Image (cartoon, rainbow, N blue to C red):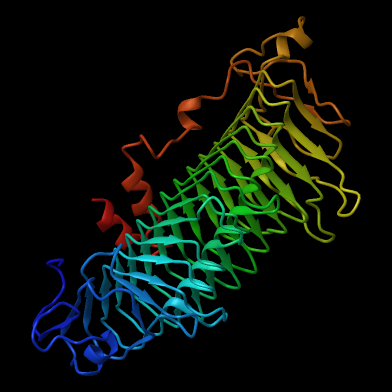
Length: 473
């Protein structure tokens, strides 16, 4: 039993052959008082029960693989309504198929759910409703039917860490990983999501703000073609998605709809058939920075009225399209996306900017300080964008081949002949002679000693980061 759990109360036993031991877990709960600990032996497992935990108790199973609580598909398996409940060491299975039910259903605060198997529930694995400051840690969630972990109704300030979310090869249901609805200031860290047929791996919906998603691995998921590994939608603002690994899934990587002020920083995204990172109708101050995106169809895409966003210092390598813009203009709004300092290397198209038949033009972005190197076509732009800031433009690896008679402007670091952009009438009038310094445009938090410094600088905006800083010290 972990040393950080209080054992000031009585110790009650369920199963086993001791005198006075209970045969049912609920009987032990009913006879316990706040602060008591209940230990459940595995010799009488499975326990066919639907537990109501309405006292602040510690509930331990002898072994997480063999101490089984089976809900008989009649209700939630464990309902926690008291604060300060600790649950460890069980397999929790067979809740009823009802959207309000779960293997473990929490309606309270300051609980810990640790080292359990939550599996083959007919609805959700773990569900939190209007619950705060809970810790969901080191659990294996497998073959739950709808959501593995679901937070809703302003479930704020919870930590979900070091869990494994998975499914059997023959599991037929599409089960989302971690979903938040109207829930803010949560920390989702170091979870592994693999082998799922999901629509969303980690998703925020309907005003879920100021959440932090850090160091999660989402890989080898045979999900639907329209699935998103991480999704932010419905005015979920000011979330931080940092240093996650997304690879070898079907569908897209990180997709944001109708939201603002989100930061997508330092993620590794590769081997996806659709988008690496995509912003849809995102009109203000989303920041996409220091990401490594390779082997996708569209590395980074801005679509459908996405404006006033920052795409900076990303590495985009061997994608079909490095950066893709379509239909970003909204009548009455100036897009003003800034796309700068990116390394765009060996893609079929470095930039691809088009008029959308449904949503119109993609004009008025500032595109500068980017390195376009050995792309089959470095840029195609049939709209009207600024390819320099009046002083510096971009580095083009094919510049000298296209303009062999160009001259270097003295002391300027640029060529005297504009670079013509295919597709329309756009020019880079200040093409760089040398690559924009990669030391200032490339950041990898996996090897950087300044990772904590980055978190410190963001902690005022994301208060939950103070907890994360303590976890990684």
